[in-house]
Image (cartoon, rainbow, N blue to C red; front, side, top):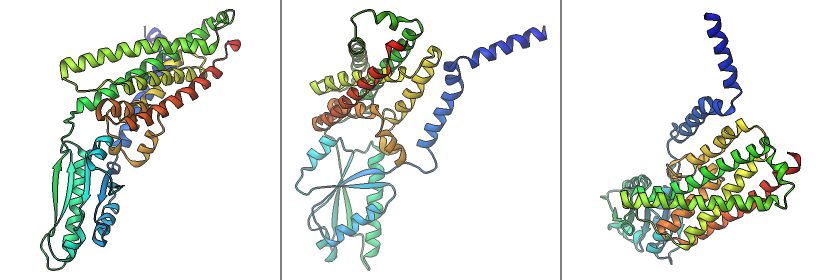
Length: 362
């Protein structure tokens, strides 16, 4: 009996080794998870948070304040021109914090009088709270540097309440983008490898259908599925969680472009794979890093700087940010930029995917 058990165990091990998908989900996937989460929550702490600052004073003292903020490892100062409307900048950018150095700030300090900084923030944002603490720390240091004075620099905080967003409102556009990526990439990778192994491409060569037309057909089908998924997700979000999102032409264009992009990406990936069993593992290896590094579950600013750089190289990041700009913030300029990036990548991967899917070689 012992020998039979060992023989069966050996056969099971060999079967496991021959299944790249099983190896990926059992061994590679946990390693991938710990590497990603370990990098995000490593001892180096969070990455730098963007702090938008409008200097209406332009004095030596305001420059000292800016130098102190820039010296911090936690914030990256983004200057906003003095002629711009803070409300519009906050609304268009979906900002959670904004610092205004008012005119007369330096003159008041020089005269030994109180000088007030205006800090607008979303108290529910970790990034905004971090930025506030950094500003307060720099202001306290400047207060100590003024000999024989009390706390001259005061911070007047005002709440950013224009949108009253909850995390679920912020989260749903990311779920929509994630659903599109998962369904399209996995569908295309698995479908194409099956077509290869069963010789269907050779049979399709006898028809007038071209590879580009076949890709167009796949994209159309995925668009239909994508909008069904969007309707389901939005319906559940509205009925159960009172999600407040806007469906507009820019959001629809982003959903269309995103579907085309990831359908083409799946075709490009599948063009490099001949093993049907390996298809799921390869698709997972491509999808999961984007899932966790594109700002769906974690704010990009909360990641270390090098991971933020990686995130900006991932196609999913632009679809997620574009949908949030269009559906949450009403930032059509930002949505248009992200739409342009997604559309451009869709064209690139469509050309690449068509070139890699060589029907004559199947």
